[in-house]
Length: 234
Image (tube, rainbow, N blue to C red; front, side):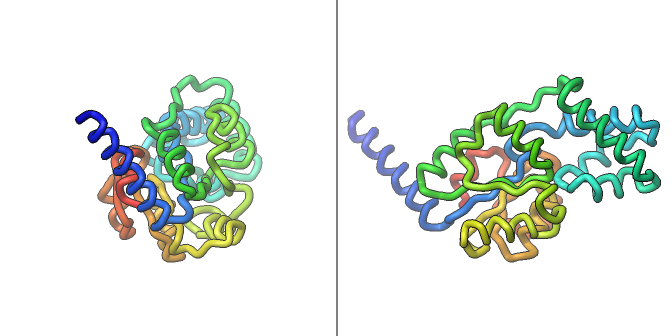
């Protein structure tokens, strides 16, 4: 009886793997709030940087809304009256606080590496499209050991800011795939908007910045609460 059950589990996994491989050729992940639980540190670091730069400190809610954007449009929203010198100081203080002083934990969300491994085993290509700059993502790859799973990535200093679809378009060109064979996975409206702009299927994740009420406005293929659920919906 145990052998029958074991055989059935293997068969079920093969069917699931084939389903994923047949339906999707590429999965593109946002990083902050999707792969890594880093929202808390981003918020506290930005607010600390504003205080040190003698700028009006934005609310936690306001900072959360810019997560995923490149720094210039984020600063436009949070500090519209700031000048270039103040922005340079703010950026330096933010980087120092995030990398050196802030001790807010930034773990991977539960099940992330298992999901990445299963997708790779199913011959699905993987990519990252993030509001981080390249050196930030490189640091995160080194800390987490996840770089080995990804075929390519695009960062905020290599493309137009989300929600413009430039990041996704660059990735598609590099991997020679059409948008309909890819899925964008993200936790913010910025992720959903950029995928929607090029008719790329998308999956919203609620464990980051935005909840179902916001994510559902962009007609995602699915909305999930945990990363392992991704394997059930793509």
